[in-house]
Amino acid sequence: MSLEVVTLGNEILRQKAKPVTEFDQELEDTVNEMFRLMREKAGVGLAAPQVGISERFFVTEAADDIPRIFINPEIIETAQEMVSGEEGCLSLPGVWAKVSRPVAVSLQAQDTKGKIFRFHAEGWLARIILHEYDHLNGHLFTDRLSANERNKVISQYERKCQNR
Ligand code: NI
Image (cartoon, rainbow, N blue to C red):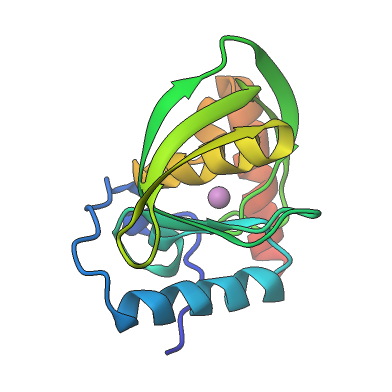
């Protein structure tokens, strides 16, 4: 299996992804390929829509954390307290911006066998999870910026694309 990361402008990034219904070998293979791609590109999270699959799952691998898989995630609760932190995205390579997000998140998800689990994350991992979860609903981190900041980041990104 060979997947590629799709970038800004690809419609799939704007679609609401569909639930996963088949917990089969193909799902395992897809997840493994996503980990491979994410590591190759030095990312810390990757959502299925970013590899052209409009389904509800993502993987994470933060520094000092184990690889994690979240299938059909549902957010149960987010902290009231917000914190601003630098984010980038493999679908907008080369640009970063400060995004405000809850400091913690609790969610429920399934593993690749379909088994349901609950998970609580704080800090950097909570940020990654919320960023990847946004991808499943067609949202990019730039959507969470002020209009000014968003225009700045998008034009930075477009300049980088022209120079590539
Ligand atoms: Ni992203």
